[in-house]
Length: 79
Image (tube, rainbow, N blue to C red; front, side, top):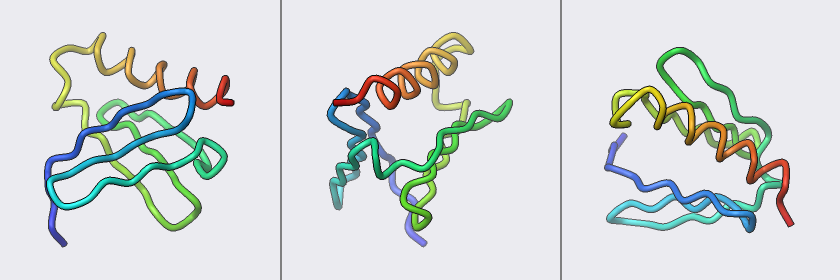
């Protein structure tokens, strides 16, 4: 498994995940659920993919919580 740094961009249109090798865009309807543990944000996509976003990559606890809240807001208000 190659673990490359990824950039996550959440918008009302969907979730985009980019690395140096690929870019994927998921519509919110494809995202099964978004969970948060004390140290991770977990995004379940189509029962086929799971993205784990570790808390340690955020500058602060507030940034971690804000990103989780932003993901939920985008999913709940998607077009």
